[in-house]
Amino acid sequence: MSDVADRAEWRIEKDLQNARAHVMKKPTLDSDGHCHFCDEQIAHGRLFCNADCRDDYDKEQAALRRAGA
Image (cartoon, rainbow, N blue to C red):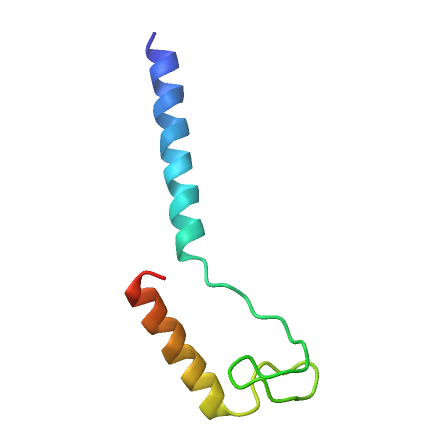
């Protein structure tokens, strides 16, 4: 009986680890030719048009995480 309980406990721990990893994973951005903050057209391979947009985007995302969104 302890084998079944041990496997169940192991499975629960793995599920919790996976859930924590999913929550903590930072979403990745894809370069689509537009700034991810102001939507200005930019060169492919870039994510933001300048450092100000990048910083503002980071601040906005941090505020959303704090708000639980």
